[in-house]
Length: 285
Image (cartoon, rainbow, N blue to C red; front, side, top):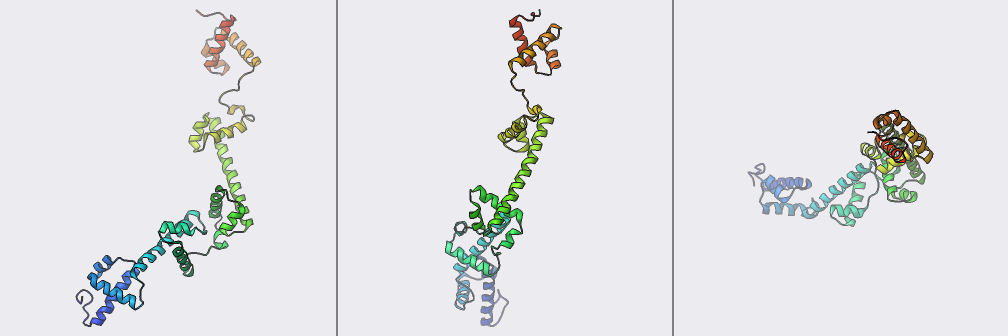
């Protein structure tokens, strides 16, 4: 051992040096094998050093040190991830933390108290949350989707009722602005590109039913939004047939009639067929 650690002549100094190095590596949460390999100690020498450290009160049992030291870091990482995800500091279920880390709820409670005492996690105060309105609104939107009442949300986030109501108002205003923006995009795509509901839904990444509902609201205001005309009344059909008849008698073919009346050729074919059956126009040879 003298050659391995600084070549001290005094065994007492050598032992103190070994214990110091072992304690340093234990505090870094190194495993027995890693400590022995780094200090080039045998298992027996490492065990004796650890026993001396425990006896002198310089460290806990290595088993507890690793188990709970690692658990403390995992709990801290879980809280950090939770706060980053929501953008604010909110209370989380101790049961969820215990299940995630693999320790008891009582141990989670003890770790949370230790972290709060050492200021490693911020207190769940109003100031740290209300400064971040965007994160707060996101969190409340998630809780609202879980069908929680305003009162339940206020109790869970330790907020005042008025703060929850202000957040919900911001969410509604933001949602209205978002719907207004998407509505404008839907109407532009229908007018300019003459896309159907499904094509618009795919392009804007929304549901076809949402697109259909938006268009339905504006059909009466702007009939051009309809890709297909409304079903004609009997009088309108009769007037349409008379126009087709006049143009047909003038010698126009079906394609020319469709172009002149700005309708599909399919409609002209049906009208000509009905006129032929009624004998109102002659057959062409």
